[in-house]
Image (cartoon, rainbow, N blue to C red):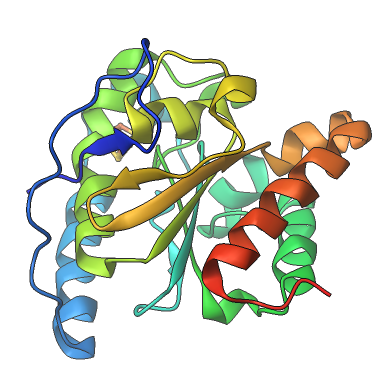
Length: 217
Ligand code: SF4
C-alpha cells in the first residue's frame, strides 16, 4: 500500500487523494528484514538503463529504523555514489548541522532519497526515473512509518506530494502523507549555492520542531 499525499490546505496543482488506512507498525526485527528485502531489490534494479550502467553502487537510505522524522532528498551525488550513503558530501554536512540545530543526532532520523542511483553529472532526475524508483521509497516509508517527513528540495517535494507547485508555494504548511505530516524546505545543496535562503530553511525547521514538540529556544 503506497502512501498518498493530501495537502492540509487543498489547492489546485496538487492531486489530493483520500489517505488509505495506515499499515500496522512492524517491530524492529520486522523492519530490518523488510528494509533489507527492498534493498536487495534496489541493488539488483536495472529499470533506469543509464543510471544502472553509470552508478558505482545504489544508495538505499540510512538511520534510525524507528524514526519520528525522515529527511527525503533527491538523489545521490558523487560522494554518495562512492560511499553508498545518502547525504555524506558538503550538502550532507550542512544537513548534519540542521539536524544538530534541532537538538537531534543523525542517528535519531532516517535519511533517504527519491532515486537510489546517481544521475550522471548530478542532473535533475527524469520523470520516468522518478516513477521507476517510486515504489522503493514508498515501501521504505511504509515500513518506517515516520511521524514527520521533511522534503529537501523541489524534486522530493513534488514527488512525495504529487504536486505541480513550486517549492516556494509548498513551504510553510504541513501535508498529510499516509499517517505522516510532511513539510517542504530547500535542499542543502541549494543552500550552499544560495546562503540567503538559510533563513527561510531555519523558519521551516522551527515550524517542524514546534510540531514535533522540540524546544526552539
Ligand atoms: S534509480 Fe531506482 S529505479 Fe532507477 S535503476 Fe536505480 S534503483 Fe532502479
